[in-house]
Length: 260
Length: 203
Image (cartoon, rainbow over all chains, first blue to last red; front, top):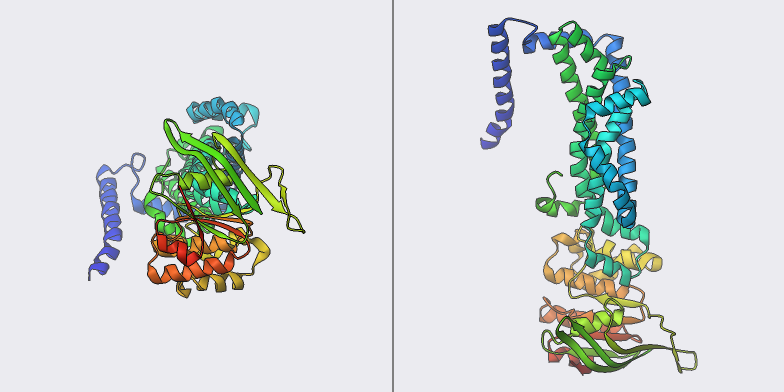
């Protein structure tokens, strides 16, 4: 009986808020200020059959995920190298603090001058994700148990096996929590950049159109689409990354870092 | 293989742990290291393995040539295997994987499994080490040390957390697997020395 209750609690709560949202839309009765869930849903249904819809999603998805994956690879490689060579880490430190403190909007303008609007989202997603992966890679590698490394030294465990048995289990929890934040950020900042740069056939362009035509229903529909795609991408990527993690790690669930 | 330690000294800050310690050991024998807690057993083992640097004294390893005569190894350390003070297992991996990490291609998975099964219950072999009990982890660590390739075996209180029966099994397993090589085992119990047929070294 209790399980039955918990299964239904969440959907009921969501239904409650949708009801509140719809009621608010009725009361305000102005489709520019607030669109109700019904109108937003209708707008979405109208979008789905159009070719532009899928093209925009495709373009933005390719650009943002490319930026993310490049940043992931670079963050991992440079983070690993920085752990190995402390001098490199010191060299990169000012660049990293710069990347973290410069507002995304400034980067967008700079990127428009440098790379133009076509590859804007790649560039922005990269710049936002790279520091997170880099920092988490270093933190993860530094959490490696020195006692296990000593053991590996005595037993003369070859480097590749050291990585698999000792470094990777230490690194993965940090990488997973870093990616969870970075994945969401890459979509939010990537789309924001597109709104400013308006590359052809992109989600950002569609949002910009909504702004011009004060088409709030479209804005809501697109927002919903962005949330769904970024959630899907996050699920798939984290599942792939998590599959590297061993069942045994579940035992340490409690002392896994929450987010960095 | 022969080891000669002369006048070994090691201190941590103001605390002098080893003071003018002498030791001689040869391959084909087991040695037991006994001494009260804090007498420097762990430190001695770590200095021998090269994990700590001695403050003074000499450690000389000699290899025996085909005629049986000893030759100075020229400062090269022999190949060690160890049970550390802690188990130092890779917690996310099974005992089988933990052993295969150090044995490489020396043993097949079936062989490793068969060896581990002599010390551990079969059901525990496919579980991550994190889920094993303290005694099981200890036995897995002992098995790993004995199956790895080595010339010199160093064990730091390997029998902690093992009850009477398993202790017997483990001791006979150690004797079987380390035969012909040099083994130095620190322990708290006098009866282990007799069971191992070992020469007693007091710290």
